[in-house]
Image (cartoon, rainbow, N blue to C red; front, top):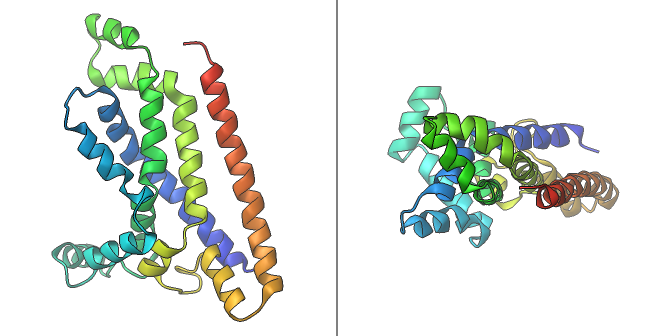
Length: 222
């Protein structure tokens, strides 16, 4: 068992879930409340990782954050190093790839909140920020937690994106999925089997929690 790869993957999943929580909540709230007809295009952009091959997303992240792009040079000057083949680069790529797994459950949870409650709070003088913080989030929290757990689980099994952007640097960008691939390539099926079994158990537990939360959310009174 390559524990360093397992720990790095868990750390990547935790950081990615935190980033998606910060980015996904305002996006999902806007999608759930806006009346702009063009929101379908924003929803399509958010859902692109569901249909695009991971290597395509990884390629665009690699090019966009590389030293030959304006953004890549600016980030390099800001951080002192380029983001590809670093843990930070993995976080950026993983957040983009797992974006729909957080935003879509978040949006569904916000849309399930009764509009009457939000309108009543607005009529009583509450600001949009206060309505979002004190009403929407507490009422939608099971769905929000479900999105966080689902994005965590999805990040655990990423392969194409992390390989394209991070490569295979032990202790820095080498995740569990890459470790399993390397073990199979060297015909070390025993190590690959143990690592795959651990990842299978963790994923099963995380997904079971997700479905339990979704069930409780559907049964909760509105």
